[in-house]
Amino acid sequence: MKDLEVIHSYLKYQASRCFDLLYQRYSSKIYAKCISLLKDEALAQDATQEIFLKVFLNLAKFGEKSRFSTWVYSITYNYCIDYIRRKKKQNAIFSDEMEKAPDLAVEEVSDKVLLEMEIGQLKRVLEEIPPGDKAILLMKYQDGMSIKEIAEVLSKTESAVKMKIKRAKAKAQSVKKELFQQEPA
Image (cartoon, rainbow, N blue to C red):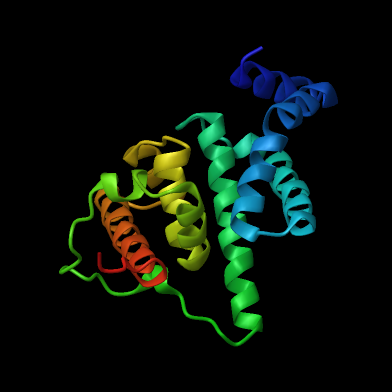
């Protein structure tokens, strides 16, 4: 059965096996996203359960305006980013770089810069940039999401998403230069 058929069946008959099927399809994907953003297995497991609770409680609100997977991804992303923000506030080190005023002078960084980075370097760079920047780059390049899909997940306009991607790439390039300065030949 396709996701929409499973959802309609669940909403109509309250059949728990339908929700179990959705859980089987999406739990590992949600867990993988949580672990990549939260960087802690126990937190990621707890987050996966919390996210499925949100999905379960809000399933009737799924408006089919996007794919179910996009809707679930949106809930996952927002849950993890909210958790990270709360944690930073609690630690009194809160500095939300995602909401800075637009920097119109951000230089365009080609996709080639990111795609040609060695795996080890890329992992290190992704660990150093803010979680929101990391998430948007992973959505675009790892998950292959379109600008439109990312905009839906983030509840932003497509142009805002393009600017966030542009800034995140610039930040990644800057961090790479800092961490792996080329030694003169």
